[in-house]
Length: 478
Image (cartoon, rainbow, N blue to C red):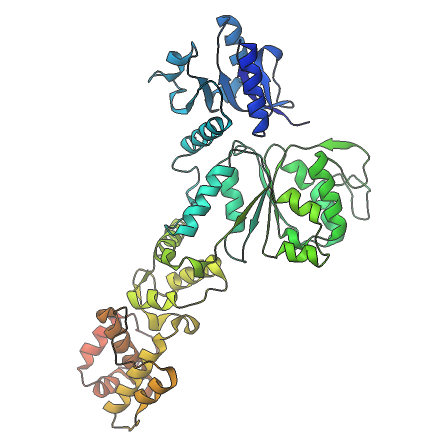
């Protein structure tokens, strides 16, 4: 049986019945204070309190005391005409910041919205900066809105999306924004554990249940009691395990492997997969009844290529995380950002995070240009470097007839024409300069004096440019 989670302090029996019914409809487990003699951790997990008509002040105080330590943080649903309104709404009241008004006649929509706004207010600014979902694109605004809407309730969530889009982060964010945030968040990758071991991992086992079970062990359901259980890659779970999981989700009861004692569980389920479950159902690889049990609230995560306008803010976010780890920040120039905007990002946000960390290690505290990105990210920018190479060959009196026209014929783009969207001339010229310098050094075997002659500049000038672009190398000769 689920734990009681909302205390209802209401002397008017009709009002009490309506608020209890409304809270039950929204998925809560309320209890009238006058029916509760005592509250214990095994039977109660307070998530909110409703305060309405106060008939007997002393009795109301007794009921309010049932909250115990939870009174310091739970949201307060306060009837607009309650006698306690002045007390709880006073500026000096510790409850003032978490009071939501409830009007009668009661409406489900208003009650649900009041609860959502209260939890959003309580979690304003975030408890954990690393859990922030950044980006101002429309897909991200919709995603953040969905997270705020579903977090206060215990509805099962199914997170869908490509690998690397941040499905576990969505699950953690929902947990952190929910009333269960002070309880455990437990994750398990259903596709990474052999089918014969997954049952033990989920439900635990008793001593001697199988070879190697030298002692009893709790499973993930027990470890997540009162909190959230995240089932990653649920689409890779075997059909046999799907049947067993479905029973637990329906009845909230399970037994350890090798045990006969039934145990009740109070966990919120969030599942995730990169697979198309509807297609898997059609192919007989996933149970339809389990799918509908999990997808009470489905959420589709956008791929990075669908929100490229978020690249700058994502890079800044990753820089902040790197700084907290002691790594230097990396700055990407306009040409580098332009190149990254043309990349398909098959690895999504995870791939971008890895790239930023790599660039921070290679080029700390300075600007990275397109030509310094790993080759696969450069895209059309390699054309600019090719043009730089052609210019260098011209300086060396080496003929390369009609190279740019041949490139234009091959690609349909003339590299000498201004792009339709314009160009950052400073970065463009800097990219060409870096390309020419590198090629001059390659041609001369890294001898700076000889490279300077090819580039028609003083050796000291070239040394300054090498320092400016971070091209110094212990292998360069004077």
